[in-house]
Length: 276
Image (cartoon, rainbow, N blue to C red):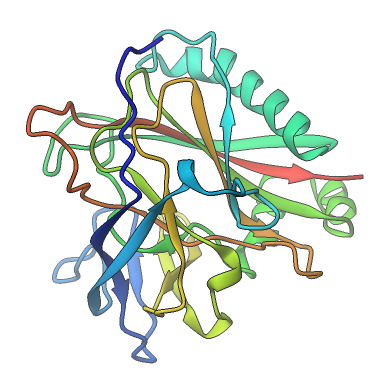
């Protein structure tokens, strides 16, 4: 257990990278882009926002109300550099955690990503922190993911009932003291804020949401996230009764980070969640 003292600022004021809603569809490449094309298109609009310390709120955020939730969750996994151990040990833990936290009957993990908070690094298999406000799926691509990862008959049966995509985000072994994750309260997002964007893979084109700036957005973060703490992020939900269906999120440069703070290491596991 880490002896790091939790930072307790009431808030931080930082610039988050929204996009301008121009009417043109942004394109992001998960592969090397064609010659002459940028890795990510879209007109970036850095916007100063206040990010509240969610540890100090009177009412803790919840997945279905706000779109994100903090969960205490120790792990048996000791080495996050071992990809096979992640799949054999950590995946099983994540499935059990989500079933307990959501009451779901089935959880399918379809991938995971590890990140290192050192901009410009060349470490293999470690991506940089995501630095644009985004959501990993859209209301179109969410159901498509179910069809991508389940047999056809089961997919159609599951799609007829409640289904969701939830990301499970945690520090990989050390506290997050740089490039923490900011999350936007789902209730403060207007449908007009969503900007559908292409995500180009080698074999397909997916779809994500970028976001335009909106002064109504309410942002939160959990300072000094510890290795035994997990963030659950609502990426998609088929429910349309007022339940949070998604959340905008992004990493940001924390002005309270000390000059000697170690770079953030994190792992996010992406899951399909089903209810009977």
